[in-house]
Amino acid sequence: MIHLKTPEQIAKMKRAGEILADCHKEIKKLIKPGITTEEIDVFAENFILQRGATPEQKGYHGYPFATCASINDVICHGFPSKTILKDGDIVTIDMVVNLDGWLADSAWSYPVGNVSADAKNLLKTTEEALYIGIEQAVIGNRVGDISHTIQTFAEAKGYGVVRDFVGHAIGKEMHELPQIPHYGPPKVGTPLKEGMVITIEPMLNIGMYHAKVDLDGWTARTVDGSLSAQYEHTIAITANGPVILTKQ
Image 1: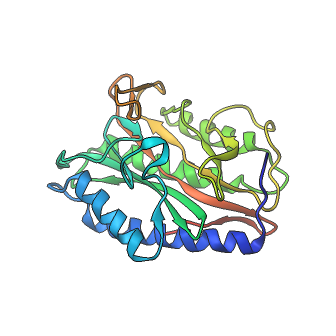
Image 2: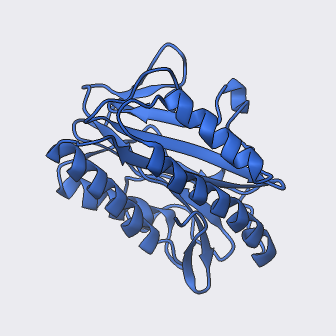
């Protein structure tokens, strides 16, 4: 079932999104060689709690952290750890904020110190893919129009578009229908309607698009060890076009 949100409900999600966006802005200041993703996770959880919200990921199907922290070849769902970030790494921090029962979800990839030209281009292209996908999130289009636009853009630049993990609708639950793939043909899938709230979260790899999952059951990596990046916003579909609820 697809749950359409009222303007009042979207406003509540936007308030959760503002907390999340503010947290990302502070995390950007923290990320540098020498910090650990465990330290970032503790900071994010405290930041969210101090603003009267809760980190929705913590405890979700037993997940033990407030954030996912995915370094270099990790596509998504990496565990925060005592691993020290090094100059040249890239790291994606993904989190979901619950404010008064309404959720917002956003991931952002960050360079650590001085990164390679390949890493810079990956980050730039993945962020651009997010925004060109958002442009397609309009009434009258279908989910496939978002998917196809992202895939066409990314593959034209030589990147692998991850298939195993996709965007989704969101509201009072983290994962609602429909799913939002970042690949596939246009003009197919669920029609986009006013009141839908979805995440668009392309994950691009420098190499092949294939993923493998570590023995922890969560951490997803590129099969060829290539770098991966992810950018994600929560989007409301309105009569006036897409509205980014997690805008930084």
